Amino acid sequence: MADDEYLLDFYGEECVHCKEMDPVVKKLEKELKLKLKKLEVWHNEKNSALLREYDQGRCGGVPFFYNKKSGKFICGAVDYATLKNWALGK
Image: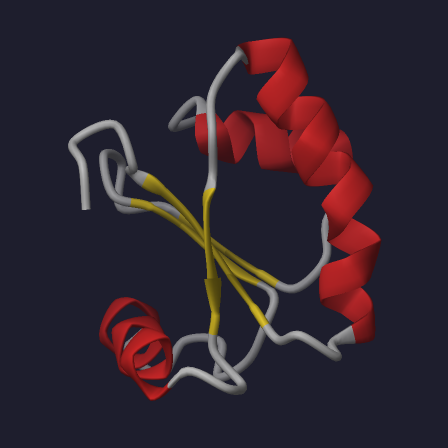
């Protein structure tokens, strides 16, 4: 993973709540001019193992967002303001 790939978006391909987050993530990427690294976990064991490593039993599902710079994470679908604060390390 490149150094600029510090915002991780773990999702499941068929996950309804993950799909709800797509427009929120796109808005964030456009507004802050950054990119979230999307990692599908339901059909990719390597990504699923990475999710377990970062989640450490805190959430146990998707969507799961992890900020490698701040160590902050989000469990589940959230509003835009919450996602933005997370991305900014707040």
